[in-house]
Length: 314
Image (cartoon, rainbow, N blue to C red; front, side, top):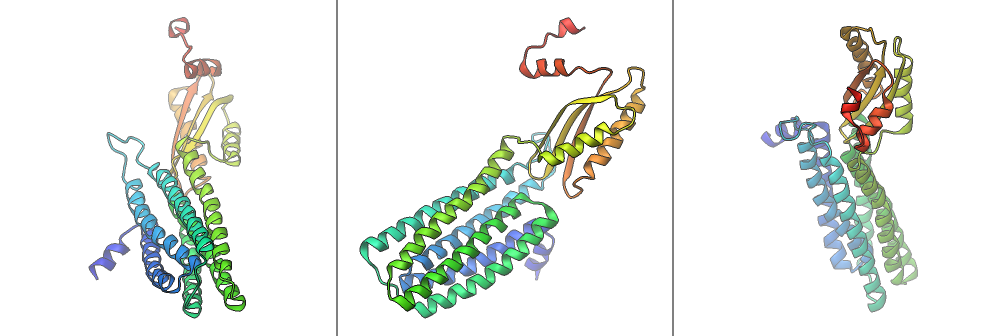
């Protein structure tokens, strides 16, 4: 009971990783036993993938836990990017599992191993497909509610598992009606290649966040439109955006009337912050406006490039 209460106290994202870990562990044990007894490369490949799923989900749990920690004196912006690091690691692990599956398939083709216990193998894969389908639907719902990158990656990962499990089931069916065991190995090769392909999207998304890629172009356009349509704003420049997967960061320079009071300028800034943050209310926002009496974009560029001479501008 204490454990259940503790799990209930977790955020939706962390509860999702707990559920995913439990499901992956169950499937890994069942498929591993049947895979070893049957000699099916495809079932063994699926078992190995489930074992890696367990490890990844446990890692994701702690990644989300760290990402939810408040900023401190050492990490002023929090630890949101740890989710991007987790995504890169998860994608790498998925890639390694795909390579191992391909290796096992080649070994089976070369040595000509037979597949046994087809009935039990088919049964465990049917169970796996049903359970994984329910897990994917649950993770997609949590990802939509929280916009968590880690949960999105997990949902995508288990969706590839769903497709690979279907391929395993098809290969077992073809082996049973044809008697050609090499079909199992061929499907193992295809599943391994597909798993590696699916990992690319997870890795690339994590890397782009670590490189401070800007927000989607349509979001940046909406932000620019909000600023441009604000009364008393003569113009803006140096609009920069990025995300760490948990928070969106926005900076921009507003060109205002030189005689405007600081209080009025801040009132305009607060209004813009409110409107921009409403574009994606589930996300945290860090919005930093800068107030200019004239357009000094050229100076901003000089500072960014390290060529500005402050003495000349005094």
